[in-house]
Length: 414
Image 1 (cartoon, rainbow, N blue to C red):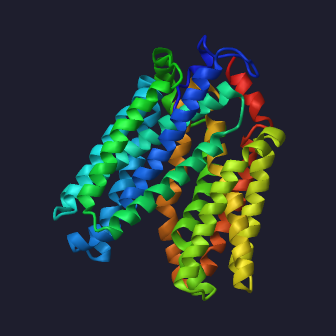
Image 2 (image 1 turned 60 degrees about the vertical axis):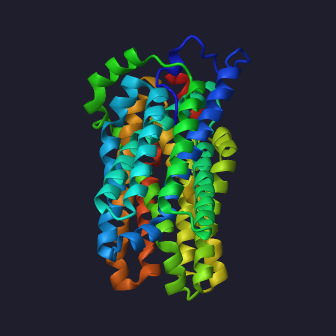
Image 3 (image 1 turned 180 degrees about the vertical axis):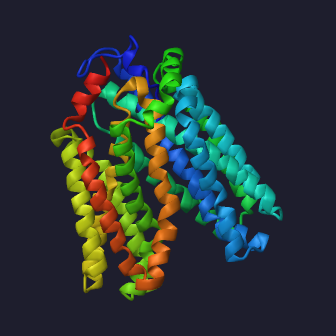
């Protein structure tokens, strides 16, 4: 999500479909955005994969670990609220560079604290969370600018690359664990890698007119929170994030408890869900280019609901697995399309992406306790049916998407 909200107004921006000299900068920016997303996923997976080691080294009980893990999302939500203004004033290029350095520092602190200082680890996670929020908004804004420059709906592919980065980060962490590499050494190496590569890559970002954007956003920060379409997009993204978070947090346990699979099969089902989402995000753009974002979001939500129904109520494990695939494919495009729609006016992209992201990310905080409450009464598998209702609500907000994403981008560039 790199790129300035004003990119569509700069002289270097060719008209849609132009074959002018803008191709070189667009290619460089595209590659840089991919690296930002991959690095973000890699950074998070690096920390998440070493949580069991940190728990053991700090001698934490489950309650203490839960409190420790709250530090990162709390930091993220706090920074998301201010991210729009920050990105508008500094531009995505500077924000991603600064955020990557800050995140690297937080990762180092978290790793250092794992050797006996929970307070230091908590401070590192707060710092990592603060960097994650503004990093997320900035790279989404740049990604939207790249979409408008290339006249192609590729936001979902950027989000797919984040999943790829998460997989690589988890795989590298697994290797470090197997080789008994200390947590502090592992996290420090990754921090140095991120701190060097990401800031350098931001040189490829599109040009930014931060002064004009900052003035415009300062006058309209609060107004964005009252715009019906922006709020509707935020609520849609919230429902899709709820669906994604439910799969990430509860699917494996639901399969083991509800469909009586083995632990290995439950983990494999979760991997299948993630793979379906990644494939859906990578191969979904042609559908958006052909049919427009509104139809795609409606079809996606319907498919997610169908998949959830089969997963929850399917009588056989194999049928449930088919439902999981449909659920993952249906959930895949929702979040990135919502972010892309929020950024379709370059003048207000930063603040609107910040608002939509802030609303959407509350699903990752509210989802686990809500599902946990119902799971205590009806079981984990049956509690997933709540997600069907949440996605159905999201379907109602799909009208906030314009029929033709390309037309929206073209309109925004005038």
